[in-house]
Image (cartoon, rainbow, N blue to C red; front, side, top):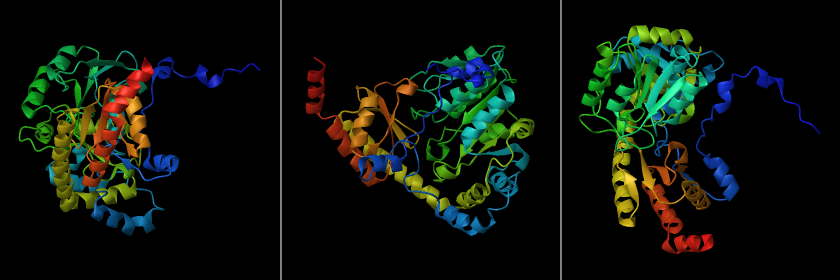
Length: 381
């Protein structure tokens, strides 16, 4: 039987066939169903302490109102954020997670192959996907010491460049660049180029020279600073993020933004989470303590890792990461293989609770045991 080609492909833009969809982390429910046992998920950089208790309470109180559409402007959440960041509400935009805003920038400012965006190799995959979705050109500059090479990116800017995507700290390497480096970078590129600064892991960083990004927004720079409620606030499943920028930039984005892209539950949860400073402090302290524990144990085990300023670690095993991912999966431990990011022998692991980290270490000892390595080598000969 001859299969007929679907006519849908006749109207599909030719560049769209090259797009590789974003691969989400494997759901813990699916793994537990397949294995018939409990599992731990250390794959998606979620908060191991769970959601903000105040946000949970706010969601419960609002459930009887979910038959109404959300406040499309997000008035009360933007007012709250305006007070915290000491900027006017018209300099704030809400999104269904910061990934929504990454895509919104591309949708607003990029239109076909005549336009171009720049990011780094081994940066968050959504930057690349957002640009490719618009059929625009993408330049990926090499990293320097697994960190964004800002000078290299500045040199790569051309007449076609409209947008630059930066992650600080970067996912998946966990590395960061300093505030002075960012200011020098902004001074080196044309003011017509929009810089998107993704600070999803902002709250975990304790370096005094890390970020003055909101000051730069107040100064009117052509900069969009992205933050999220998915990480330290523990609200990844509710999808809420926001961007800070100059009024003209936010106005342009608001024209293209999908209406009701921040749900009612997300808005009330976000307002409550911003007041839950205790949960934030506990989350940051847990991450700092367990990061120290994990890196110490990795050193003892001879596992190389990249020092991280986020809530995750990029670890090098020297073996095929997809194979190690499967082996750990069979141990009930879900991590993230990094082949997609250009690290074919590396895994990214989220820093979990102490008992989760101990289970990870036990699984790694079994998976990376010398006798298993010997058996694998023998099997290949």
